[in-house]
Length: 276
Image 1 (tube, rainbow, N blue to C red):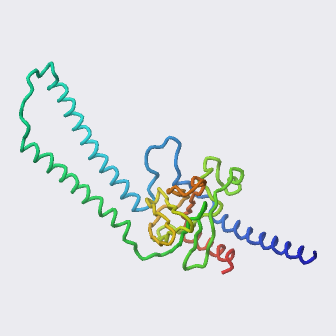
Image 2: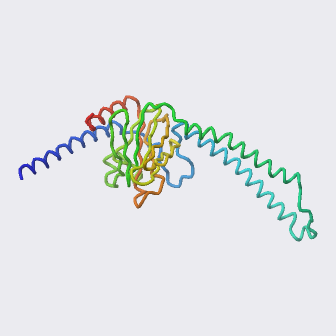
Image 3: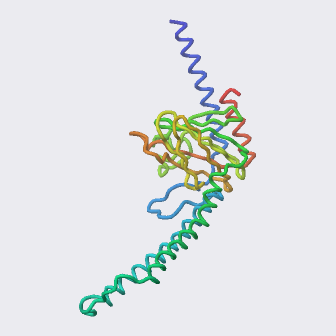
């Protein structure tokens, strides 16, 4: 009985030590601005914090202009046909079936439009898929229903679980961030190239942070990669974006981008917590 009590006490003490180390690691990254988070009634993108996100936003605006012009042009043609060629205005319809110049035009013009779209969209795609040399490499694993992270070169690993409503204040979050904030966060230094190695442990998940412009499926048995270089300090949120089971909606992502000095301090605390 005494042995059992001693073992229980030892585990409890170890838990308190690790919790204390985790709390210290959490404290060094507090007081950051919430930058990447959804807003009620919002219809636009979150503020871009990487070059990838800015390229994606520009491409979206470019395509919006093209599709708006096409929509207005087609709507104008339909209105003109309805007004000019209705039964009252055109009692004797034309009998021709072909118009070669018109058929050439409606074949060539869409080809030109598609080539223009491809010329601007492919470089954006290539910039996402060509993985540069990493300053920091993190392996992220999707589980039902939380994320696991491993700083590959540092020996630091942890999991991120969604905070309950009554836990938010303990971590410095307000109630609006319920279902977005996690108990632990990825911490990164601003201005560094980060490569994420993404996989799944059970089913397909998807690691997504909108403000970074990144989204990558986490497929069991496969190791995919994405990269980004955050250029603004702050807190960014993401969520699993692949339907993965009953608690799919409850596996958010929290990323904190901090100064190099703050990152170094956090990393030392995280190494202590991991026994490195």
